[in-house]
Length: 138
Image (cartoon, rainbow, N blue to C red; front, top):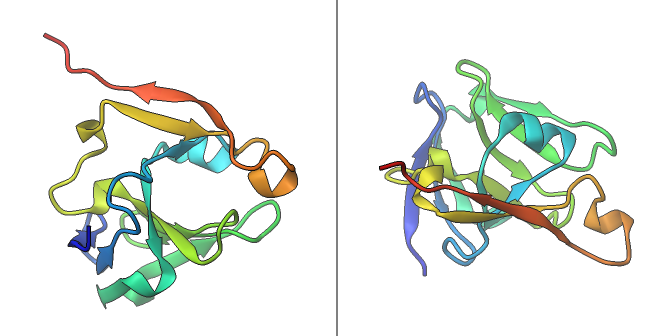
């Protein structure tokens, strides 16, 4: 799937296009302290597959713990747009809610990765901590 997605933050100050690494097959959440609080569903993109169309100067970077992952937020509306992964620094995690025409509620089941025990800190690699399920009420 080589589809190019247009994306933006909530206020539209940050605009970008992105090609996903493997479509929505990489969809996930994480249970680390930051991801637990921000609640975003992310998909993967290679570093070279994101192009900023405007507002890159409006992004604010946040790092914590090991300082390896770079998390980016719009400095105006506060929406998390993407992050450079600690587990795979050649990839970005892209907030699916920023993708035009896509909602995190489009996915009935999303794996939740065990970020509290980071895969780079263990020999076990990435582990699934559970699943987040969504179904519409009647």
